[in-house]
Image 1: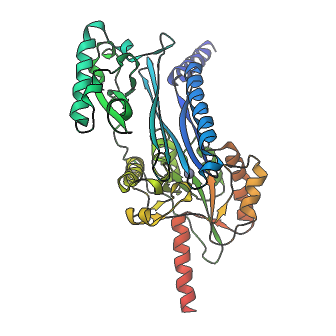
Image 2: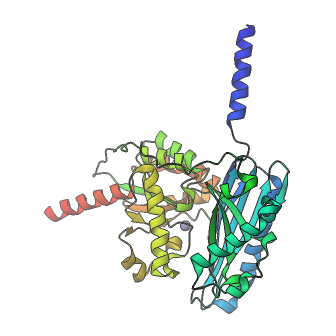
Image 3: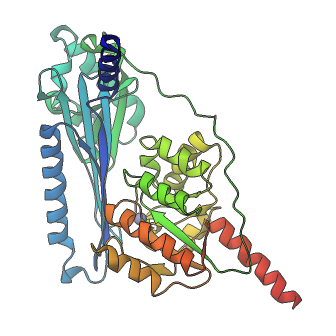
Length: 428
Ligand code: ZN
């Protein structure tokens, strides 16, 4: 008996230490108003101090943006607010978070890019500044290195006279796999509105040398071919589609689909894939389809051709890294399409014809009814796997649709069924 207790005790210790205490989830806010579109993604960590600062920044930005731009004076043009982030836990010693804020108007008369930076020392339990990671005797060397890297990378756009005035103590910086990344707002040292970024290897900093530095994760290649479901073309089909994920709610939705032998299509954001790679692999292996919904939910139709391609291609690449293949469908952000976007991508653009409005309505019943009252054979239903309420709605909606005679299929399967039906109709 004593032995048994010891084993249980050991198991408990193991399961406790295995889990990282410095994990995080992503908070997503995506909405479309009369005069504005908003897409915000930022990390919620396990550290109250970090969350408080990030939340304060996001809430202030959101409120100010709506107050300034969701007004009657801008009826002729829309404004976009986008907040993206990076998060990195460096060997359970430092946590770095960076928020990138972008505001612009449809006509590009306004373009604003800003960086908000919070780096936390877990051991000292406080925020640190850039100069805190420098030893006294390396300060001059690191400063000249930063200047050289900036001039090397941005020689054409940089204002040399402004480099002398760089405030090193308050530099925006973050950690990533092997680098310290430093960010400058273009307005402060260049004559543009971009964010300038340089990277210095972590090993260049004396204080960071003893930390356990992880190399970038290698590409995952052990994916399997997905299940293929049998579809009866005599029966009606419907495609559930989920935008803006993956999120912490996605796995629950996958479980509901699995229990009901059904599949759906997930139009994912590229910047979330690395954090939810196991969700993506599971999603794909279960026979669901993965589509592209841009990298960080920028308003695609408003971007330059180069920016559009970057948003789409970066997402294609990061999906391929985990499932070995890239999407063939694109769902444009805010459902907004124009000829420039169509010409600029090989992906087929997929919109929807039934909107559950789950981003707007908080009641599960309303979301379900919005789907059920409009659904018919061939419908594409829009939902978002970023809400608990959507996951709850799916638990009722999926069995109800099946009861009503629908087969729940992916976009590719829906297209295939429609093709076969058209051919049969031609023959008749
Ligand atoms: Zn979206």
